[in-house]
Length: 145
Image (cartoon, rainbow, N blue to C red):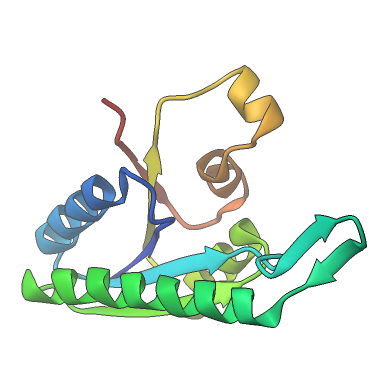
């Protein structure tokens, strides 16, 4: 069986990315390993008193993201594609590459919004970082308008 890692961020193009990954998984008789990486600083806020940590904010956000991840997993399974998922906090690129390696991934499927230049300088591009550092083939799906 072909193992395919599919990172998702719950953005407005996630559904399109998932559809492409499902189609690819069906073509190669693959299993999807769905992953969402939440930032480590979800519960932190800065105000008059400096940095403050609110664990309840972090717990609620993680709980909500896990619900979304479960919905995507069920949607994939309903399309007769085997799937499992992981939600983890940390640095997305490192965690995705580690997850791919630990699951003996044959492919990582990422989306490209078609942005470049100044956007990459200020925001960075996870897809660009993964393709640069991965020893595993990365299938980049165009998911822009």
